[in-house]
Amino acid sequence: MSKTFDKLKPYLEKSMALMTARNLFELDDQTTAHFESEEYTSKVVGILSDEYMKSLINDDVHKLLGKLQSEKEQAQLTDTERAIVKELGKTYEQLESIPPEEYRDFNEYTSLATRKWAKAKKDNRYEDFAPYLKKIIEYKKKFAAYRAKGKKNPYEVLLGDFDECFMMKDLDLFFDKIKAEIVPLLQEVAKKAETVDKSYNYLTYDIQKQREFCRYLSGYVGFDFNRGIIGESAHPFTLQLHNHDVRITDKYLENNLESAMFSIIHESGHALYEMNIDDAITQTLVGGGASMGMHESQSRFYENVLGRSKAFWEPIYGKLVDTYPDNLKDISLDHFIKGINKAAPSLIRTEADELSYCIHIIVRYEIEKMIFNSDIDIEELPQIWNQKYQEYMGITPSTDSEGILQDTHWACGEFGYFPSYAIGTAIASQLYACMQDKMPIEEYLKAGNLTPIREFLRDNIHKYGAVKNTNQLLMDVTGEEFNADYYINYLKDKYRALYDL
Image (tube, rainbow, N blue to C red; front, top):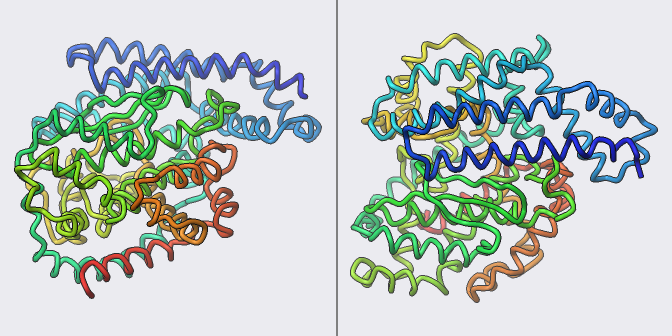
């Protein structure tokens, strides 16, 4: 028992409450708020952000933190308390280096910029968003430089905010392996994929029926509607207030059946992670996922490893056909499985197939490195983006909406996030290989019984929140740290079987 930690608790609780309030404003802003509210709501977000910073960056917290980091105090803490102190140390170091007025202005500005991005994407007008992007990049460069203190690459600082286990050298090795192993396979598969008829996917699908079926899908994989809701937004996302209040959103396209379905499975994977975090650590600094890489591993595991398998759809495909009989009555389950796994170069990341998905991430990673390691004219980013897609995919966006404007992350200031999707995708395969040795996953899926799968992930990953980092969790569960070979082998085995290569 540490009396010093008890003295720290009120500060942590206040900071948590302020962050929760800010998150609620941002959720509302992206889902239900009227467009003209943006400038006024952004001021509220700025004030809440300022109060959040003050709740942690003050003399009292500084003294308590310093004492709790001592060897004597560490010995009196529980494992969870030590993890909270460690996380507070990182948060304190990050916030302390930024002038308070700049931190407030930045949060106010990104709140406004996300709405400007949404409108620019809708109108296909990059030039309307470019000034906002330029200012956000200026902020992020400045903040990263404050924190790097001349000792680290500023982009490394940003990467570390999302997963401390992966820096540029790790990502460069990983992405070089993807280019060497997967790009040739994608090119080989794409030739055969042309024979897969997927025209059914682009017929007209009633939006209300999509909402109803996606709600069913979310519940099927385990989303608890007593502790969460589904909303709608320009870009699907998950936001947790605590483990008993998790919000997810989806986006529905009338002429694309898959889009909303796989987005809802993806976001439900995120939600399950948050819902299964232990009650003892929710609403604390370690009450979220271990990292964004680990978080994305859960969403990608549900979306792709399970959600694009034949075993997953065997018990429920009939319900999908019954929902859209005119469109799907002549589409067999085998035809559907080939369709949802059709692999070919594409423009939209969130709708990409498993095989090409990480190429989309490589494009974004390389552009982010260019932004932070060299002086790039913001006006040239669409051209650079299009050149990258031509280089890696052999295709070029015809509009900025399907090019550089397609993601919301940069509008939120989330530079360094994108690699988490690729890391998570690879981790999903590593966990799957481990789980196959421990349980008959395919039999469970065919029986429509996802409970043992959810329980395994809850007991081995979810409940720990951020008490352990990515590699610690992987070591405990699989016996080794991150290993991309499982991902490479998973893709090769799956797509060679699907396309008789």
